[in-house]
Length: 208
Length: 312
Image (cartoon, rainbow over all chains, first blue to last red; front, side):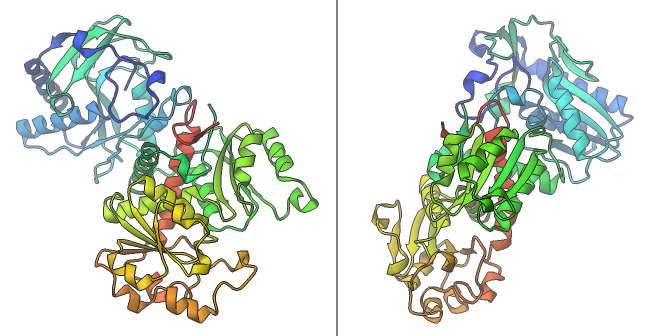
C-alpha cells in the first residue's frame, strides 16, 4: 500500500496518527465505474495472455489487501478466456517496507505462495494503485527471499504517477493523472461493497 | 515512547490478539514459505541477559531475533563479571553503553525486569523472573491452544502442579482471562499461593473432578530448586494424586490437549506415554515459541514506537 490509498482494514491499534490518511471517499468523485473496472480487468487479462505467450509458467501474486483480490479476479478471467488455471497467491510486504522504522509496527497481512512455488516462473505482481513505487520495491525484495523467478512483471489497476523509484507497470488498467493533493480510492465489492475507482482530496498525514 | 513486555497483564485483548495473529503470519512465512531470514530488525541489537539456566527460552529468543536479522548478544551470569560481584544495574548499564535496543532478561528475582526497565533506554522483555511472570510463555501457550482448538474464548484450561512457584501459571492465568478462557488451578494446598482466591480463575485440590471437563490440561514441573522445605510427603504420593498418567488421560474429552512448558520430569508430573502421546503439544509449544517471540520482537522493535506492551 502506498500513501494516498485507502488504508487497509485491521491495522495496528493506536497507529492511526502515524499512517498517511486518505481523504474521505464520500467526498471523492468517481473516475471508473463498476463496468469500467470490469473492462479494465478483462483487458489486462487479455494483455497478460498475449504478452506471456498464453500464460504458461505465470504465477499471479497480489499485494494485500486489494491487490490480492485483483489477482484472483485476473485469474478468473484468464480461466474464462483460455481455460487456463493460473496459480495465484498473495505477498505481504510489511516486513520489507522502507518506512517501517518511521511508524508504529503494522499488523501483517497474509503471504500465500502457490504450492508450485515461484522458482523459474514468470511472476506477475498485482496491486491496486501504483504510486511512488516503494511498495513494488519492497515486493521485489520479498520475492527474492521466496525464490528465483524467471522474470517479474507488474500489473496495477490504476497508475497515478509520481514515481520515486525507477519502476514501471507492464499492465495498467487505467492511467489517472493526479496531483499529490489527491487520493485514489480503489473500491472492490469484496471489501467495500461495490466496484469503483474514486478520486478525492488527500489529507496528507505525517510522513507521506 | 519506549515500551516493554514485563507482565502478561500489560497486554490488552487487542494487543494479545495482534501478537498471536502476527505470529501466525510469521510462522506461515518461515515454515511454509521457507523464508529463513527477514530483514525487519537489521541493525538492531538484542541482548539476552540470562541470570538463570535456560535451554528453550534463551535459544528461542536467540533464533527469533536472528530470523529477523537483529544482532544478538548472549550473556549468562556464569563466566561474566556478575561472578565478580557486579550488580544487575551496572551489568545492564554496561550492556546499554554498547548500544542494545532491547534486553531479554531472565532472573531469579521476581521484579528484576521491572527494575531493569527503569534503568535502561531500550525495551525490556521479561523472559521469566523468579516465581512472578513469564509472559512470552503464556503467549506461546495461547497460540498453541488456538492452533489446536481454533479458539481461546470459552476454553476450559486446567493448570496442574506447583502453582506456588510457577511464573508460567501466573502469566497464563492473566493472559487467558484477558482472552476469555476459563482457568482452573489444581494443586495440593501447600502449592497454591496465598491469595489465589483473588486471581481471575478457579482453584481446587481435586484433579480427577476437573479432568473430564477440560479442553486443555497444562502440567507444571515441581520446582525443587525453589523449595526450602517439604511441600508434600513424597514424590510417589504427589505423582499419584497430581500426576497425569495413562489412566487419567482416558477420562479426558476426545479433543482435549496436554501441554507442558518444559523442562518436564517424566514419571513425576507426567507419564512418558502421555508426554509422547497424540494429545501432547510439547514439541509444538517449542516450535511456536520462536514465531511468538519473533512477533513480540517485531511489534516492540520493528517501528518507530512499540505497538504493544507497558508504556514507560
